[in-house]
Length: 379
Image (cartoon, rainbow, N blue to C red):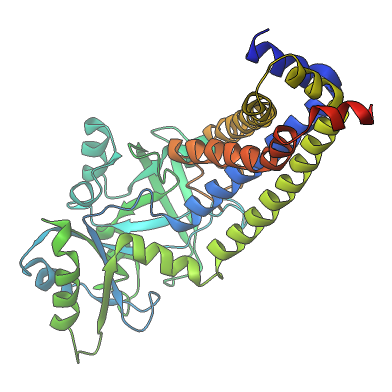
């Protein structure tokens, strides 16, 4: 009698219990997958460039800085390329249609963010069109935009309410990251805004020659503008994203707390299920030992059942979470980086197997220590 055949025979003895236990694992791991997606969406570490820094006003990101700072930053040894940005804050058709809109440095955008790919012919047209704009693939799909469309936006900032743009291109992200941004020309922005806004930028994003020099360069930038009217704060792109998230609360702690409760509950449920299954088969396990099967064989038989349940349930749950994430952001722009990395899938399956092993360990040890005489006497 084969070990594998015994496991499957025992699992299907109580089909309803088998399916419900697998379902518990699948639901728990699906939730874990969604939590991993949310953590990645808020954290931004997965898509942040290791060689990129972000420079903002030391007081707050909502405070602008002189455009002239850019040339001084560029002269700092180790800086490879730099681009300036402004947040726009416009609305398309309805107040609920939120998506990020940035005034960009057209000449340097592709140097700083090479992973955000725009076809060369579209980029050429965009550069030549003062009212041109580039939209991310996801935001274009969301609103049904196509190249050549006229896009009207309304803004309550900068003293100008009505803006219109020509959609000259659509970008994609090679890192499976942000694809919901809307970019337009700095020159067009400068042309329409009041004098108090002209020549002021929101932040700089820069690439460095060597990521190992990032800390040194960040300190050099901030030292350059120390004691000036607009002091700066420079950090790595991943730290900048993490600090931005902290303004909304400790998202990571919340996610870890929810995940911990879910996994602990799953451990109790599965452990109880395996204990009941072993208790129901006490006589059968005793017979196996009586006909020559070793204590170790019986232990691994029970443990194997728990691992099979965990593997199937974990794979189903993580597979469903991966499938959901491939469909893109379902929140209408609140979680633009809606993606489940493969390493999170592997981690989820590994956690499921660990919970399976832990939940089956005590029942397996109990089955291993079972004395044939005592077990048969109970029957």
